[in-house]
Image (cartoon, rainbow, N blue to C red; front, side, top):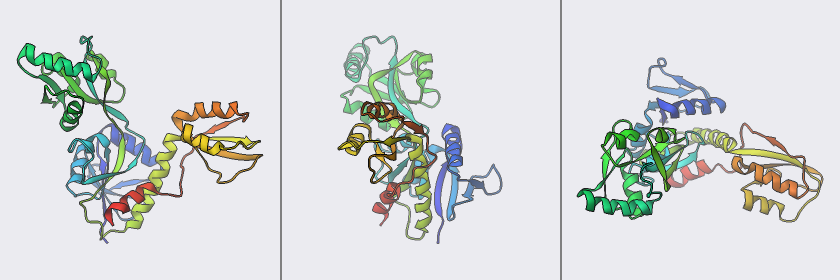
Length: 323
């Protein structure tokens, strides 16, 4: 059997976040020949050949069919052709290295707050300056598609090699599109994000290449690997609420699911049972308040290490395209 070629980031914030994620999931990496080499394996998962590349290289290698799986940013995959590549599928959102690809303009543009305003300005810019508005970016495809979708047609993309945020103040562009996690660097460069200027919400994901040959590898190892990653990523983005269900209210489970995207770990429970409820982190407070309003409580909040589910959606997604 051939080994599963898995691309992992070799540098940057995404590598640091990945290392923390894998360590917390109990997954250990061994680099063949020492820390300076670019190949390796997992101590506790057989059949993998790890290739350490830049996040951008991983996206390209997946698209070219030179990797079976890769961990990289959603923004880099979407940038391949401005949308999710037909050669690469997303299997699992991992919940770390989150950032937004955004459109930003100088703070001095007080009359420009959204993409409609930008469309008007871009047309006026051509008339006043006899040239198109320059947009500095590393995301040419995403930018072009987003601008055209929002009826901004009079612009010229300027490829950014270094710090994109500094382009307007340096005079090499009028505005930018870039990726940001906090917006702090944008503020330092006197830039503001347009109200509807989020081009893409990105995070680290596991991707699979449709072009790679899958018939000669041990798929069971991938299934186990994806199950652990899914359980860990689910635990990162969700929280557990436990309480005594001293009374049973009709449609409680349905209401919790519809309003708060929550689900009970107990398949069946009666009045007086202690129950566990899983909800997204962002909904935990609102869901707790709702339960208290129904007369439940006290409610204990726990942060799970793993949340294993009956269905392995990442695995199901993979098998649906390779078989």
